[in-house]
Length: 113
Image 1 (tube, helix red, strand yellow):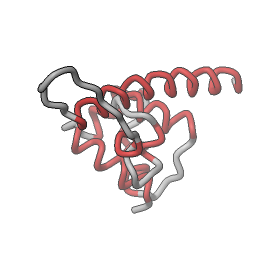
Image 2 (image 1 turned 60 degrees about the vertical axis):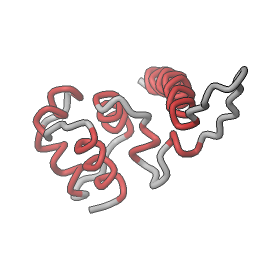
Image 3 (image 1 turned 30 degrees about the vertical axis):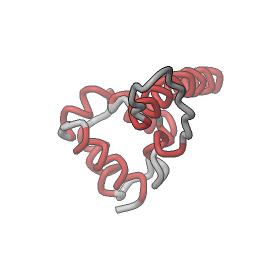
């Protein structure tokens, strides 16, 4: 299994999705998902984008050992004595950045077609 296949498989487990469910959500065939997950097939950029969108992840997370969220540093401010949940702030920041990246990626893919 290659890195992308491992990342896709891990993301499917995290999302509690079967290959069949991911295929339906991404518009790809189940056999394509199976071959990508096993690493026996190269995944094209548009296919990776479809998989990432179906899994609600930035496509970079499927290509990298270090998750996008873990690459974000967040400086949280507080007033008074309230506790700061740094991981929750990082997740919110990651989600906002992911939306921007997904929009950029879709626009780049659309420009290529």
